[in-house]
Image 1 (tube, rainbow, N blue to C red):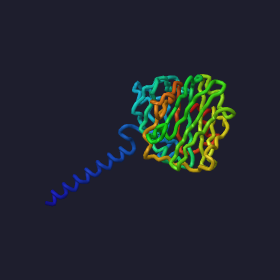
Image 2 (image 1 turned 180 degrees about the vertical axis):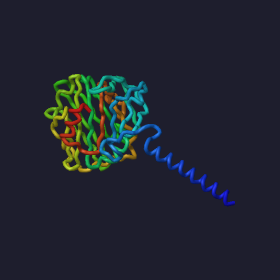
Image 3 (image 1 turned 60 degrees about the vertical axis):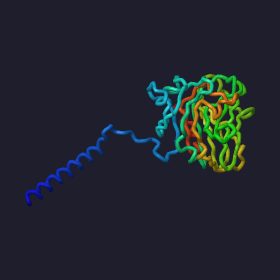
Image 4 (image 1 turned 90 degrees about the vertical axis):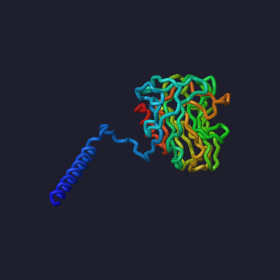
Length: 275
């Protein structure tokens, strides 16, 4: 009996020792290799980022959001040469990259946000939409979108935001506020920075701030009705069946959504690094 008990004890000890040894080895060296530290950990300000640089022939993997691994459900657009690496180019009517949602961006933008991306476009012959956040209850089927139109000498950019306060507002850069030089078919960096402190949106082109837009008065914090956010589109509108809501025909690279107001220095750093 004693011999049997000792045998069980020794076997139990051996099993425990083996499990501990395996666990330690697993902690020191993950089975699939060492993982790089996340430069934007969970809770960080960069909520959505697509740089189109994955070397793959799969259009969905090519357009994956590299911050939170959010894959598009559809990407019929064309891979092209970007400001660095790859980009995506539109040109197909009513086509765009479709994502389920821009991760948790819409839930966390109360005190400010930044929308930043590189664009390359000649003067459009129609009204075109580089991005849209879908909302089926809105007249445009989107509670956030931008539209571009106009000519080389008189470009027009309009940003539309509809939050749940309500606050359905247009922010327009046209006429004396026009962001000139964007329709020369060369790469330009655009950033739209909103601060709840000022209720202004400042538009940057290639790191230079253009006229701020205070159409919201004292709007302050933003609150999207996230239960109605149906998805996010790069290169298209919320309602492509509307004859004037045309898809983007230019190129887009390094598309970013932050839930914070980037400083002028931080915007410039994206331009300098071509990010």
